[in-house]
Length: 252
Image (tube, rainbow, N blue to C red):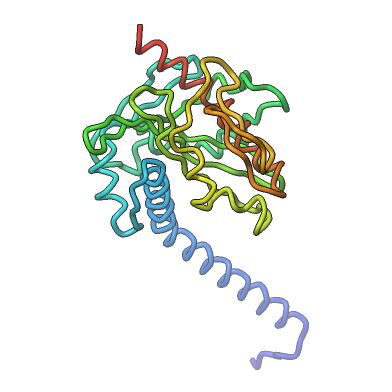
């Protein structure tokens, strides 16, 4: 029996078959690429953590450099108490490894109310901390995440062994305005933080309007990118409050 290729039934059946084939193909491709995507994201995360301690690395060298400089990966609870600790190679499937904590996801699902510097709705969140050794010095790298003008911003703040002096920072963004807020990722902005110190109590650090006079606890922000600059200030102060609890308990 000949098939009428001009019939509505044939066209409908053919369309369904093609949709199924394309759908299965896309799903297979997505699943196949997922391990590679995770590996690329992990490499980028390592590069950024190393960037905070002023070690320039590439994605191809990230794993080796990370193992060289990062001696311990710690996670803290909301009260700044030690929850877990890992050393050695990062295992992507190890959910207890602090490296695998998705701080951006946690921020999205526990986003604090405006002005809530205590992050009081994040009491079930774990906070990663990276202990590094560089040229005989111990450094502590803290992930920070917050909101800019148009979307999420994030980064890493590295502290000296005194846990008060900023060794370096590395910031990034998703959708900030090119030439304005997007410049938080540029070296000319990051270098301003090096050597600055945190205040004894919150607010620990300030990012002032571009061109302002600064002191040891502040830097001037991006000219024309005030909201993004204040986003950097907010995420630093909110997150540092958690880690200071840990640092203070370690000194007792």
